[in-house]
Length: 89
Image 1 (tube, one colour):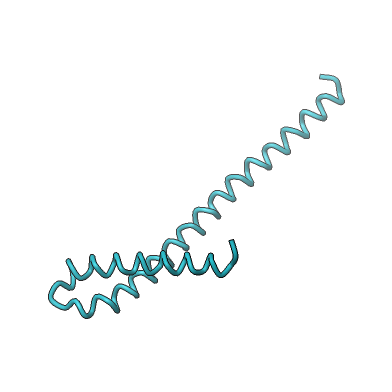
Image 2 (cartoon, one colour):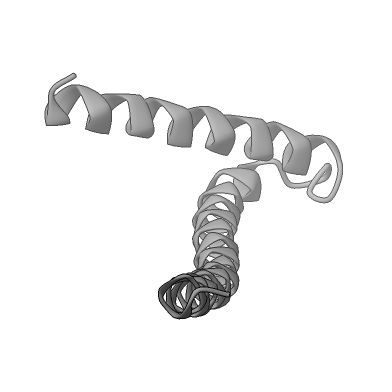
C-alpha cells in the first residue's frame, strides 16, 4: 500500500468518526442548535484523537519498562547459568 493510499484511509476514518460524533452531538447536547455541532464535532474529534495517541504512548512506554526488566533478568540468569556450567556445578 502506498503512502497516499494510507493517508486516504486515515482521512476517511477521521471523517467517519467526525460524522458520527456530529450526529451524537446534534441529537444530544446541541439538540436546540445543530449548526454548532459541526464545529464542535471537529474539535471533539481532534481532542479524542490526541488523547488516544497519548494513551498509546503511555501504554507503550510502560510496557517498554516491563520488557526491559524481563530482558535484564534474562541476561543475568544466562550469565549465572554460564558461570555455573563453566565451574561444573
